[in-house]
Amino acid sequence: MILEDYLNSRRQLIDRFFEEYFRSPLIPVILKDSVTYSLLAGGKRIRPILCIASYEACGGETERIIPYASAIEFIHTYSLIHDDLPAMDDDDLRRGRPTNHKVFGDGMAILAGDGLLTEAFYLLSLNPSGIDPSLVLQAINEIALASGIKGMVAGQAADLIYESQESDPETLYFIHSHKTASLIKASIRAGGILSGACYDRSLLDSLSIYGEKIGLAFQIIDDILDVEGETEIIGKPKGSDEKKKKMTYPRHYGLGRSKEIAEELVTEAVKALSIFDEKADPLRGIARFLIERRN
Amino acid sequence: MILEDYLNSRRQLIDRFFEEYFRSPLIPVILKDSVTYSLLAGGKRIRPILCIASYEACGGETERIIPYASAIEFIHTYSLIHDDLPAMDDDDLRRGRPTNHKVFGDGMAILAGDGLLTEAFYLLSLNPSGIDPSLVLQAINEIALASGIKGMVAGQAADLIYESQESDPETLYFIHSHKTASLIKASIRAGGILSGACYDRSLLDSLSIYGEKIGLAFQIIDDILDVEGETEIIGKPKGSDEKKKKMTYPRHYGLGRSKEIAEELVTEAVKALSIFDEKADPLRGIARFLIERRN
Image 1: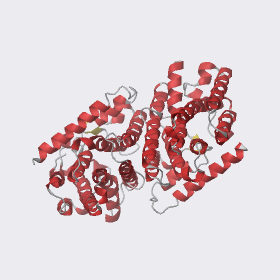
Image 2: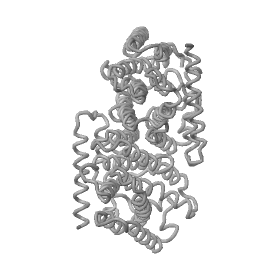
Image 3: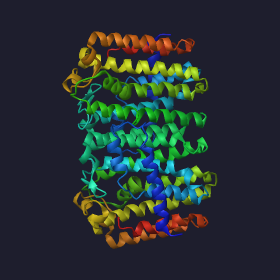
Image 4: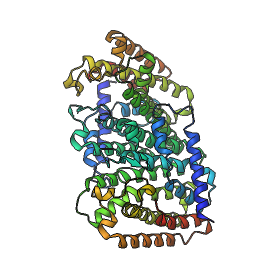
C-alpha cells in the first residue's frame, strides 16, 4: 500500500460526497455559500479518513462508511469556523484564505457553524447505509460526547481561559486531549463501532489507545508547525500561538522534547494495533504521516 | 384536567431533571456556570412539555420521555444564547436577567451554545429509557432537521438578512415557520415517534398539522407581545422588533389581523387532533394557553 494513494483516494471520496450533498436543492440557498466556503476549502480530511480506515481495519466496505465519516468533518469544520471568530481566537486566515467571518460576517459565521454541527447529527441519524440502528446510536453518542461539554467544547473553553497563563503540564494535557484528541479518537472508535467490531471489546480498546495517542501527537505537531512551519504551507500565520500566549507543548517542553513526545506517542499508537492484520496498514501509515506532515 | 396544574407538574419534572443532570461530577466545571445560567433561568419549557404531551396523547408513560423532552430544551436554550449575541440580535436582557454573553463574555456564550446543542444529541442518543433504537434514530433525525440549515438555523439567517427590509408575506412566513414553528413541530412529532405511534401514519400526520399551526401561532403571539406586552412580564425590552425593523406579523398585517390569524391557527390546530381521545386534552389546552399567554 502506498499511503499517498490511499489518502488521495479516500479524500476524493469524501470531497465528492460533499459536492453532491450540497448540490441538493433541499439545502436552502441561504447559508449555503458560507457553509460550503469553509467545508470545501480543501482540508486534509484527517478525521473522516481515520474513521474510514478504522472501519476498513475491522473489515467494513469503504463505500458504506463515507456519509458517516463525512458527517464528522462537518463537526470539525464547524469548530474551526467558531474558533476563528473575533470572540474566540480572532484569526483572519485559514487554509490560505480569509476566515469565514471575514467573508460572511460574524453572525452568518456563527449560524454556519451551528448549521454544520446540527447537519452532522442529521446525516448520521439518517443512517444512509442502513447500518444496525443500535450501532448508529452508539456512534452518535460517542461523537457527541467527544465534541461537547465533556470533550472538544471543554477543550476550547480551557484554551480560551488559560491564554496568557503560566503553563502547567496538567492543564496543557487537558486542553490538547479535549480540544483535538477527543474528536480524533471518537472518529476512529465510530469506525470500529459502525463496523460491528465493538462486540469484540479488545479490538475497540486497541483502536481507542491508537486514537488517543495519535490525537495528542497530532496537536503537538500542530504546535510545532506553528513555531517551525511556513505560513504559506500551513495556511495560517506562523507564530500565532506565541502571540496569543497559548499553552502549547513547545512552550512548556521546548521544541526538541515536544518532537520526542510526538514520536513516542506514534510508536505507542502503532504498537496498540498489533492485534490487527494488514487491513490496519493505512492506520499504521497515517500515524507516521501525521508527525511527518508539513501542514 | 386543570391545565395550570398539568403545566406546573410537567415543568417541575423537566426542571428536576436538569438540576440532577448538571449536578453530575462528569460535567466539567468549566462552562457549567454559563450553561446552567441560561438553562435554569426559568423558561416556560413549552417545547419539552409539548413533546411530553404528544407522547402521552399516544399512550406513552410520562417518566420515560422526560430525558428526550429535556434534550429539546437544550437546543432551544442554545438558540437563545447564540441569538442574543452582539453579532446576531444583540440583546442585553432575557427572562428578566442579563443575557449570557453579558455575564460570561461572547466567547464563552458561543461555547455554551455549542455545548448545549451537542449535549442534546448526546442525551438523545444515550437513549436513557431504552426505547427502540430505530425510533430514537428517527426522532434525532427529525429534531436535527428542524434545528439545522433546513430549519431553525435557516430561519435565524433569514431573520438576520431581512432586517430593515420591506416585509413581504412569503419571507415573513419563511422566517416564522423556520425560526420557531419548525422545532415546535419537531418536538411534537418526536413525542409521537418515540411512543411508537409513527407506525400509524394518520396519528403522526395529525400531530404534524397541530404542531405547524401552534408553532406559527406561538411566534405571532411573540410578535404581538413585543408590541403590547409589558417589559417586566415578557422579561425583555418591549418594542425591540420595531427598533431592529424585524419582519413581524403586526408590522405586516397590523395587530388586529395578527390576533385573528393566531386565533384561526389555534382553532385549526385543535381541529387536527379530533382523531385523538381525551389523552390529547393537554395538547388541546396548551394550544389555547399559547395564545392567551402574557409572556
